[in-house]
Image 1 (tube, protein in one colour):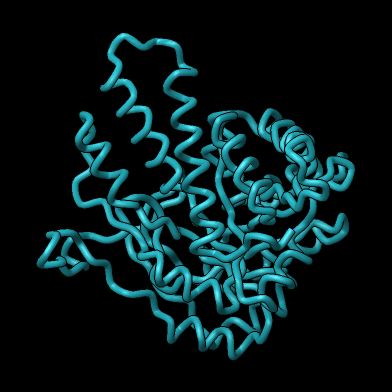
Image 2 (cartoon, rainbow, N blue to C red):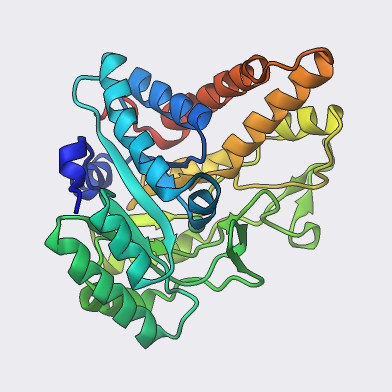
Length: 332
Ligand SMILES: [Zn+2]
């Protein structure tokens, strides 16, 4: 048994309470490798933003859960080295799908876990989420549960159709599960292809796809039912068109990739939404920088020469999200 407290990590309780009160949201960035982690920590340390490092099932398969946990531990020390005296860094399991997996993360130094039983029937979702919360709370680890279904593909989580969270269920669900935060479905979606072209309209000037707006009415309804309760948005990448263009101009092929407009995420951040998950945007930043570098310098074969620019681009993106979209800068 390793306690996250001994690793210098924090759970989400205090950061969420402050975020809900302050009308901003905490960034939750997924990481799979060293360059991503360096970029996240540099961005958070420079802007003094609390940050959630997320490990998905795909990341565990790719990089190994043990290695990722030690990297997060190293990240705390690295943040201090960068001059961030009291780093507010949470290590979070993204989309845990079983009690055993959540337990193993709690036992191994994670400070927060998500149990995603949203694809199960309502009562089963409650029962599994409740078991996880009961176990995690013994060790002061916070728990995110999910109600409603998001469309899209993210690592091994995928659903064809979304259905919005039903506001009439949220009080019962949060009470009976004892979860600390609730991921809801209000029109965000996993991956870089969040909407099919037929769900969008086209901007006549640019020819770009314009996605349908988020269901703010559902979000506000949920806020009214659970005043001050931390709400989480998954699948909240914006799929910056600059990156898509760079990728496509340098041998890539991402036709009609589309995300959530940043103005809408800015608006959500000011509500009870206090955690916003961003993964695809950093993948796009990394891929754009790597493709461009390799295309510009065909003789380059030192990975540092293309992963370095990729890291710089991701850092720029993270700072932009923190300062211009979520408003979490200066809060840690
Ligand atoms: Zn997700």
